[in-house]
Length: 454
Image (tube, rainbow, N blue to C red; front, side, top):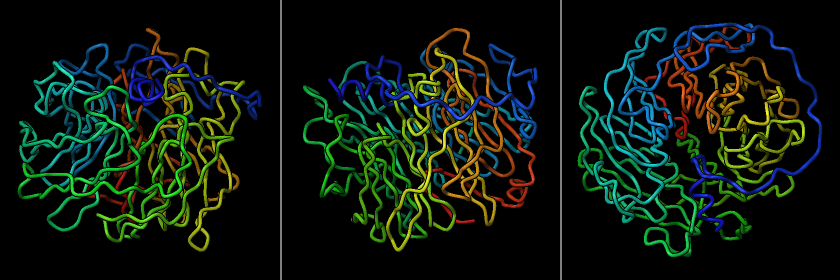
């Protein structure tokens, strides 16, 4: 029952979650928005709240064939003047040469849950985390296959499916670790699932897929390392939710449901555990991890309630459904503080810490992060023990009810791009003395789970 819940709802899908949010700590306060602006977003509700230093500069609604009721926008990846947007119905490519006027280039209908996306050279990789009929995009009937799908994107107007790799329990997220002409992909997925042909027990591992960049059709699994020598068995699931690699530092940080794990990836096919941490008092689902630029800190997030519950309310403690900031001291992680958005959300607004990235400000530790219907938050954790929000963008409750809000929010070449589950692609600009130095940092590409120094 637990694994089925996780694979359906606890991990950002559309089914119901039954776990309750405990605690009765009161939030520190409810700040009055610095400004309330009515901006033409093209969305179902034009009313948005922003801090004075944040402005919505563009919104592109979802369009057919990726605008069905359950065609949720998911993750983002960047390359040159393009942003790639995952969607439960497939993926879309937008030209962002002018970020204030993004243009749709193409859409690929390829239905699957998650469809988290990364790009590398001419390759695009999608995560499939629910059994479908087969590896091809038109194989929607059946429950025989899940894993990674691979596309050639050399022609942005006409991406081409080139191959796939089946992985046990599918792929909820995946992480690229490039090595010359070989692309290693760490596959994270929950499991096992009773009576499943694609997710058998036991499932105490990650899977490493090798993709030859010149022959992606020959991609295959090359390792299934057990990175849990002293597993703190989560009551939720085995496996990992998300892994962030920092190849330049030979490090990775894995969020593995009940544990946070620091890894040595100097040999990318044989990751070694450096440290394993847990926090059963405050964290329910170790969701994701982000290093600061010099790899002296790691931010782990807790996706309390799986993304479908209203955990940004006055009855949920500020340490739950939040971010935990750890300093890396003499090779060991030490917890310093927590961050949670200070604005209370309504009981019908699903809200919890979700996907984010660093804003590349030299000498500072600043992140932008999605909080579903809690919106986009920009926060400073330079002082690990006392992180503070410095800006935000937020829509009101989704009029139709149900799961909504921003799935991923990442900074890329001067702008923040937010993948809103229902409202489409948002482009935001922050103008603030703390973040302005980031505008001088130019990236050629960006996959959030593969960090690069700036």
